[in-house]
Length: 157
Length: 471
Image (tube, rainbow over all chains, first blue to last red; front, side, top):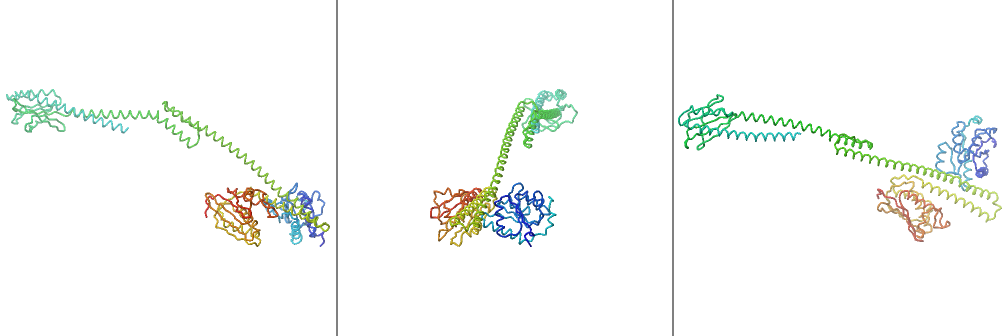
């Protein structure tokens, strides 16, 4: 199995610093999966539905969606809500990776059907560890649900 | 009505009785006079045995309407002469008591008078007269009739007067009473009593009553206005408070999210820097990097504590019965890791039940115990005592330790936010713990204070209102 065959990881993150740290962490743990990046919620939805800037992108299976909560335009909770209410997408594992440990965010995320909720640790060592475990668990260890053909999920907003 | 009727009846009967008595005595007097007249006029007839003349004398009695029969007897009991108006049977000769010269007797229908006829002191005969009492009965009947008529007339009059007075006085009074009842039942002060009748006092009464109602109505209206204004103001304030509260919530939310991100970036990139260029750094440069990371971590802790403090201030207090002894046991379980294998002598007294929010009171206990453990860490023999005192209206709980203590001059700073009496390199902490304790205790309506001396340990107190506190 080559890297090209592995399911992708989508990271939706508006902060370039956080994005760089996350990517560095994934790289240092040698997560082989291709990582796609969306810089806000709207881009994430465009990516998921292969529209706008992503209209020409070939469909690919997703191992995991890493969502930041607070993003411009469309926030993480709204992206989560759309994923979990779309029969074609709702089996995709979604993990909130956020700074917020506010109870209300936790409750709403779980109500919307999030698969996991991880608070970004401030200490980098812990952050690395968290990302490593996330990658290892969701991209490697976790058995993905049988997905419908990726094309069937596209362009059906 | 009944009373006046009875009074009238009694008066009538008394009057009739008096009149009858007068009538009878007058009749007796008349009969007596007639008897003596007959007696003196018939002396000669008796002496000459002229019964004819005697009968003529008796015949004079015809003028007296009530006399129905008169007779004269000789002393030896022989009927000498008689007069009869109605032809009734002769009367027997009366028997006189010894020495008596006149005798009176009554039966149902008649009065009888008998008199001894004397001549020069010697009895020569007896005259006896019977008078009919019919006149008296007729008079009595007439009297009864008059009394009955007066009774009926006066009762009718009384009835009429009461009717009229009812229309003029009782009617309007009843109307005022009905209005009062209506007002008190419907709480409608707009009701007015109607003007009925023309009596001056009643008009004044109705007017005063209506004035009173108008006054109440005016006060009621101004009270309602004040109430409405107050309610509007409360609504306004509540809205303002809600706005402020949601602003505050938005603020703490962004603090929680946005302030933590740059800290993460500082530590993250410092670590990446160390990974990528660490080999080229000298020791001092590496120490700088460690300082940067440590400072960022400390700020993250401060932010977390501050957020917890802010949340605590907004948390709703849901009181229920809390067993303080149980709470202390739980808190000791939570601070167990702080003990870190040290020798600590615990002295926990029996504690009362209090009304409090256990989820808020637990951090108070945890904080006080954790402080006691922290500030006795330099002692070989640490002693921590937890006790309580039930005072008037409150339960006071204290946590006493034999730790480093503090200078009472700074006691007022102990419970302030970010106030610390020790350097960070002596004892760790953010300076928010006791501020949290004070805030929670105050939210319960209690107080916090502390006593201590440098090097001689400290005692931290908090009180809770002891509404129904029991040991």
